[in-house]
Amino acid sequence: MVGRKLFDLTQGWGGTHPFGVPVFVVTHTAPDAWPHQGFTFVTDGVESAVRQAAEVAGDKAVGVAAGDMARQALAAGLIDEFWVDLVPVLLGGGTPFFNAVTDVPLVLDDPDVVQGRGVTHLVYRLHSRA
Image (cartoon, rainbow, N blue to C red):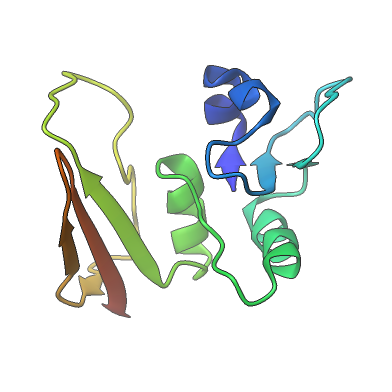
C-alpha cells in the first residue's frame, strides 16, 4: 500500500511495481485513466486500503510504504512489524520515516538483522503500545 505522493513521485513505476505485487494507492482522487493492471486506487482511507490488500494477499503479508501511510496505519493499529533497510547514503533531507506519531511510546522487540552488501536489513516486531 502506498500513498498518492509516492505513486506520483515514481510515476507509478511505469505500470509495474518493482516487487511485482498488486499496489493499493491511497488517494483523494483516482486518476481519470490508468492503463496498467495491478493498481487499485482507494479513496476511502488507509484502513480500507489495508483491508482490500489483505483480501488480495491471502496468507501473505501486506506491505505499507513508510511516511504518512505508515503513520496512519500505525495509528489504526494495522502495523505489527517494521522493516528498515539501512543504506550508507546521506540524503540531507526528505520525509521523516514516522512524522507526528501520537500513540507513543511503542516498544519494539530486538530486531532480526540480515547484513547484505551495502545494506543492513532490520525487522522489528511491535512488542507493545503505550
